[in-house]
Length: 190
Ligand code: HEC
Ligand code: HEC
Image (tube, rainbow, N blue to C red; front, side, top):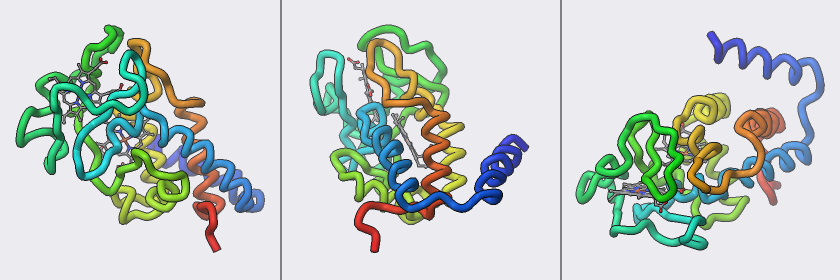
């Protein structure tokens, strides 16, 4: 119900006015990329190497996760040391510096096709608009993931002195819907 109401809310103004321009869509994408390229997101959105990253605090930029943690093909470390050994799947306030973050979901890496770490704005843009490389979603599905994912909620409010991505989650959802309404433009599209 909530999602339907929301969809109507979002659809209404767009239907009533002209669709946003490509330039407006590209500007909205820049806002989205400012979040998807932030370490709170890219530390998990890594490639098939399966090594999560640490960034900030005392670690500087882009240090590999300590203790030889490897997510492997399972993306949860099932082959070696499971993520849940330390990142317990239960909600926590995550206020203690250097404690493993914990949320009400099984801590894990996303599927390989969602790897964004080290990638350009154009590359991530093309990944996120394509259901083949965005985990199979139309844009409203991506928006509802943002609104309901415990990973994303934690990323915007990580606690323990960790830096946060720019803007708010609500602003990111607005930008995503605008980008979608503009036809998901990416830089250098014909
Ligand atoms: C702890 C690891 C982790 C972190 C941190 C993380 N994600 Fe993800 N993300 C995932 C997983 C796992 C999936 C695959 C879907 C699922 O299993 O929930 C995913 C999928 C996605 C998707 C694709 C849509 C979908 O439903 O699959 C988007 C978009 C996304 N994440 C955005 C973000 C953003 C934005 C941030 C930072 C604010 C972030 N993620 C931080 C683990 C993470
Ligand atoms: C042996 C314990 C342990 C295991 C196993 C472990 N982690 Fe961690 N992880 C930690 C600790 C501790 C931290 C926080 C380090 C700090 O802040 O100094 C952390 C932090 C992280 C961060 C950084 C969060 C951020 O953006 O600041 C990510 C991402 C992460 N772990 C992913 C994983 C994944 C994915 C797995 C499984 C493949 C995993 N971890 C397994 C202990 C563990």
